[in-house]
Structure formats: C-alpha cells, structure tokens
Amino acid sequence: KTCRAIARCGAGTNNIPVDRMSELGIPVFNTPGANANAVKELAICGMLLGSRRVIDGINHMSDLGKQGLAKERVEKDKALFGGRELAGKTLAVIGLG
Image (tube, rainbow, N blue to C red; front, side, top):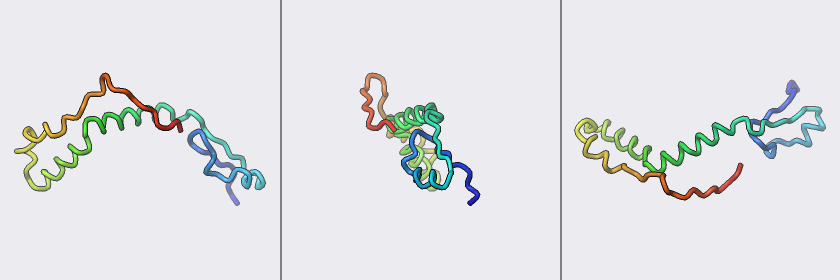
C-alpha cells in the first residue's frame, strides 16, 4: 500500500504483473540499456574465465593451500591450466536478452 512505482533494471517487464499494477495506479517502468556496458564486460569476463580455466586454477590452488602444498606446487601445476587464446576463435551469440 506504500508502493508508488516499480522500476525494473534491464529491458523487459515480463516478470512484473503490469496490468495489475496499472489497475492499482502503480506505474511500471524499465531501464533499457542502463546496464549494457556491464553485461558486455561480464560476457567478455566469462569468455576469458572459461577459455583460460581461471576458476579451475583458483580452486586447485585453494585445495593445495589447505593441504600446505601450494608454495611447492605452484610452478609445477600452473601448466595444468594454460587454457586457449581467444584470438582467431569464432564467437556464437546464443541469446540477446
């Protein structure tokens, strides 16, 4: 009863009952494009994390650290997580929003 408006970060309002809110006199609006740069940056980050197996490397070193082996194995084990370069690869866009 104190809601004056509903703002949705992003392009759509499909997860908001717009018709019902209109009946109640509560405006619903979105912010298309407001986070576009952040989405692009996170997509690039995801590609780098995946292609270079960064998370696998972090988890591996964390496990070694818990065992007290990180210092002695870091140089030897880093070759396990070399990954692939993105240069020359083809990117497929699966979704658009």
